[in-house]
Length: 270
Length: 189
Image 1 (cartoon, chains in turn cyan, orange):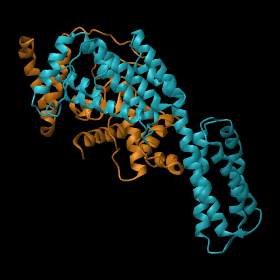
Image 2: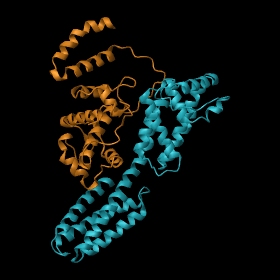
Image 3: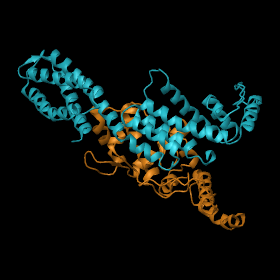
Image 4: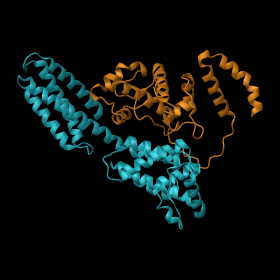
């Protein structure tokens, strides 16, 4: 059963019933046709409700509320009942089905397939260290932990950045940071930090924002690439700290496409 | 390479002159792009990404060949395309933070057209599954579930005839409209 399609069809017809009820000039709904169509719609709802009951992506509390509202609606349709009761029940069912059930179901089904999409994006990565982070990140995404997935994928990016920058040699790295600090160009004049690394591990302590700015300074990235990587870092920071932001699987795919192209598969970082 | 360009230049100009005056500049630019793509020896790439099962032939990091007739017919340059999709090949994602359109219905239809082009960048086919369209429509807040089917039906001329629930595939008018939307997004209209 295509649950999304079936729910859309029921919603379409419920909205049509809603319009007909609103149009009535009487205080009660007594017409047999309208009442019969409500009972028919309920019969079509039952198997969908059954599928949703066994779904882990739908809030079962919301589903119970919608099912109870349906029962109340069918009971109303048994006799000529006040229009205002119909109106409130129909409104309740439509809004809860749309947002609480259907939207969640769609997001949930995106979660179920997001792993394949992400794996395709990073398929050419072969470095075992990176694969460790990425596989863990993808497993997080598959269990709907999107924020954790974003943070772990950034670990792979940070790993590549550290490896590339330390490969320059610490003396060169210190000197390049010094040159960047002295640069008064539009992009670099806000950078004022003094870095002096004495071991490779010190580089891991540097702010990622400064490391990617240095990558721009060293021309590993052009302005547009830097801008996109900075956005990816902002998303990582938003997910790694207590904020109210909840990225969805679509955002995660875009994030993966960016980090893969800009760093993980960028020949300049090998 | 310059010698070859000199030799081919007259033929290029002849081709350009066959297009309407208002499109000649764009046509010249696009033909030159194609000429350079065809006559430049690609630089060796350090990493060669393994193609995905649905991937189509495309130069590394470049625009897939299968979508080029669509781009040429709609005067969409690589520069324009890069403002809407990233990357402009397999793995493409829509860059826009908002989909053009005044209401949910128009936005959802425009999104479906953009998704078909996104799929073409991936596989060469201008198609889109309803599942993907619903997911993206929820993401872009243009999913009007009670009217989802009705909105697609109202704009059925953009898609090839299909059964209910089947994937969307762009028709001629759909391709044309998709081209217009891409240009609108790129120019910020």
